[in-house]
Length: 486
Image (cartoon, rainbow, N blue to C red; front, side, top):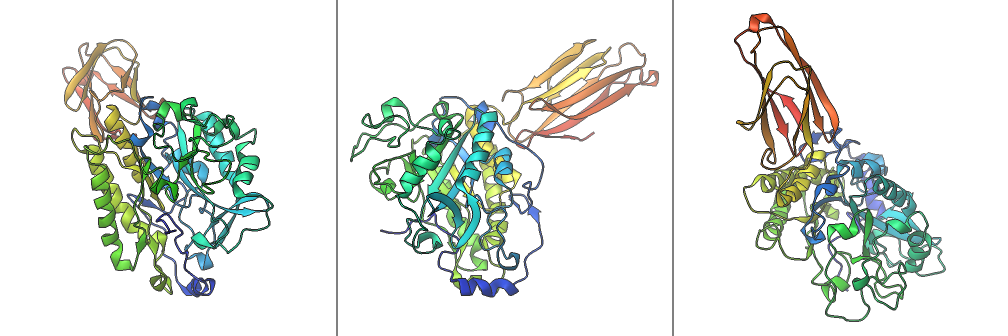
């Protein structure tokens, strides 16, 4: 069976060769737009509930989601910190808080548990650590969903794992079912399909979400409403087990190329032969995104699953700093610009599907998120201004158009629809009249998602009689930032 594209960064790298990298000097920490090797993703912004503001009827195939490749590698220690196996800087809690909604989990079947790995590296974590974090997050953010790609090398040495699973007395599918799927804490959070989707011969919650056999009339993919508050397993393990399917077919699944070809689409691009080929690699990825984000194709009911992470080939990985981190520094920056341009392009909706990345920063995450709001006709954050201590006339404009005019009362002005705010940069103007020529003050509180981010007092003295005082702010609806410009 042909090996599919979503594989280990260094699956062919012998341990002796990896050890040779111990003399390489690692690159200092940097943060450019699209890439970050910082534990907060470059900036302390949060996107914990961005899916909750999308329409319930949105098919999951229409979502644009930033995911993380080899999600649990944030604290792996490579040889002298060369970061061959490390692909993430944020831990799982921070990833979810930042807006990541697709995670990549590689299991080695060890003592009837799922021990997390990246190729040859044991990450010293159990699947339960990831499930604890995701279910805790979903318990506080019931409008979100998390796509979890689940892979098990099946003990055959694929994905760089040592040949042969560790001691286990049952099939991995049974371990997943008994240890994790049926766990009282996790079970309520797994998406189990809807009644029309399920094989009636299997009781609810025992796997086999899709009908067994070569049924050509498979059910439609769920909508966002169906999966809110749930973990959607994308299964890349034991496809022919008696337990059947625990979720959707994963991107490495043999079944998706045959029985489920109308459910998920991926590409076979992941290797970068040398440091000079990073731009060429991005251009090939860009061609893929140009095709799938075309408005004429964006309406198709197929999950698009594509990575922008890159794997250096063995020859170039020896004795030099050419790692997933090195590739991400270039590719992420290019991808960030590209997704931002798509989000801000006029009119048409562009869908990019599940995009798996190494070392994403908040800008990259938020520009992918913004593509969803373009389709929904709204913006990713809720913005408002609280005015108080008013005894004069206030006028407010949005992008040069007057939208509010009031006097002598405290008021909160929401800016929540696309008619007032557009994706990207917006100019908010505030003008304080001077009708009474007496000294007065105005308190302005700026809020994003209900949280005050800035508060200022403006004072008008009698010497200002006859003059209108004005202030302007730039508001970025993608990042949720306010900035006073005058």
